Image 1: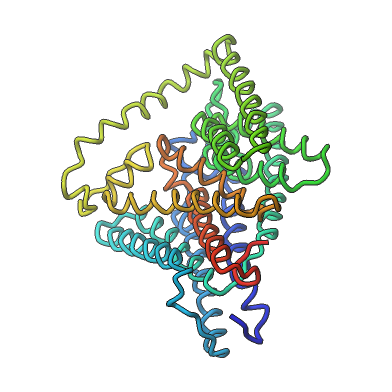
Image 2: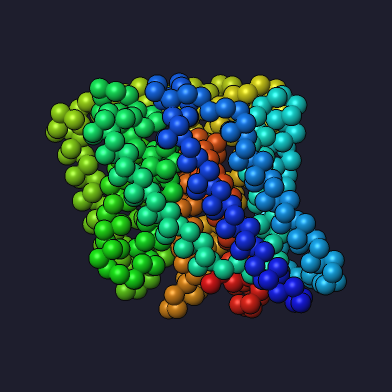
Length: 423
């Protein structure tokens, strides 16, 4: 698509991603300084007011509406045409269609049964509709998104350091922390340990793959690994390790497979040290005792299977039922077809990104592809044991990761680097 409105046509997709990145990463900054989260999981905190909870979704809708208006004006004024018969953009329609169906279904069900969580998920899925549509004729500059992640990595390290210092010196507890116990979980600026843990593939990737100064790259990466451990999110840590192993192995070929063995060695060493601390030290024993309740809650996930009647499998049940697992929770809330579509998009995105990254070899592939490749693998693994589909901003980045794969497949099929390539 070519028009005289150069900045709009070439950058509107990038602006949309940038706005959503910043909104997702920084919106919950208020939690730690104002002690606002959820009283049932954070004893020293107050519940988040409804207007503050819903504010991020209103802002997301505002971003989507603004993008829609800009695109409509540009297309109308330029009288631009897009070849909708082009088979190369088939996945755009598949992704857009599935996102549209899931978003509409979640919103309608939320309105009918009065469930705000369904409405929130519907808005998040709506992001996929707009971003997927933009891939047809707009450019996405990935290095700008990587820069946002790099800056956020620094913020995470600094805020975590401040939180640890305040805890050590004054006893100030973060969210999901209990006084006089080892269950002190640090979530940095998100003040959400699980959420932070699952963003680590993006942050660690941005630091390890794009920072040029070796010393600061090592310092920042080591600090992020420590921050990951301090989340005490066992599912998050395991998912990140598995994503690193699976991602490195599947992307490697020939000599590049050496990276896999290096990652495997580091991962096994890290797990050995972690297990030794947990099993042999007094702190480890206390940690396992503190986690006993969580282990029990997650171990009872299969108890929800008897509730899977025909109406529930079709997503037509009128009650709100959830589980600790994203997949089972989605089945219980929205039915099996909805869940399969949600999973299909994530798996398809991983397959597409792997193919595009390997096709770019031996050239360096767009780094945002690689970061989201690892992130999506971690998300799909972690969703087995955590309800990540409800965790903001991780669920938002899942949708944006799928949208990135849509841009990737359009660029690779058309072989036109000035259309939808991510630089």
